[in-house]
Image (cartoon, rainbow, N blue to C red; front, side):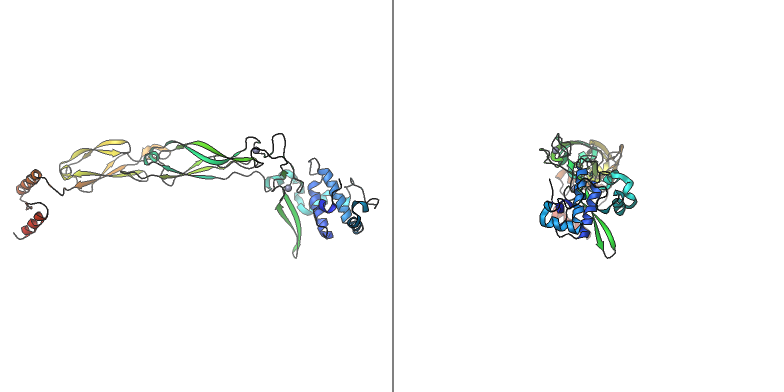
Length: 383
Ligand SMILES: [Zn+2]
Ligand SMILES: [Zn+2]
């Protein structure tokens, strides 16, 4: 039952009087029954008080060092249980005032909220998604499979084996932090650090949950249905709330962010809400006008090529572009660039007809094709 007194105060055997006092104040503050309602806190406080009583007294400490507990029996020290006046601290409030100032009355609730190791929000996750050109334009549903941390179903995130609960950390008395007063040339400073025993949680899991080994979260593969809004573009980021990693100790989960990239299309090029494509027309269609079927994101569509269409003319197909995100009835345009194809080779009949036409218009043209035609054209220059 009798724990080593130095151990009780968490000090080394050669600790100075000042160290011992500091250690006692730190621990007494945590275990004082006025503050700490946990089972065992009162006993711990009694133990602390007795350890301090002995070790702060040179005489008693010397005897304890030489003979252990035996050296104290009948040594006149106050027995365990008498903690009220222990060690020269008339009242617990002294201990509090010196550490917290006016904060002492705030109660443990206020401190718990800010302690390290409290509920933590889970991490956000990133998922890279490649969409087909058409998918990005019209949106739709897509299933993705992700790996994320989910709250353990066995222990509901507590990390403790069902039926058992976490116990208050004895090292920090459930505060989650260790305060240490440090004397510096500028005065006494109180350093606060997360308790190394409980990682700042204030609780220790004695029998860990077998499913998550006490971590409270498990890596899990989840398939999620994602609704892709019409009009997303490469570089868009979709946020799926709550599908990141689960939070710690009841903290909220993080979010899943889907980074979108879009595959190129063999025919269409997209710029924001507009679509661009190129259609070839013959020189005759350009001159005489025509009707033709062109591909749009909505499928084939008939367009009218007006007579006298010039090379590089751009036709605008209203509302055949990309839907606006959040307002899909409003769409961009489809710009159709017309390329007039001038034939490089003519059939005999076509050549004859064109030559006839040229003659009728009084235009000088070559009478032959290819290299011969070129020589012929040059010859024309000298006539
Ligand atoms: Zn678990
Ligand atoms: Zn602790």
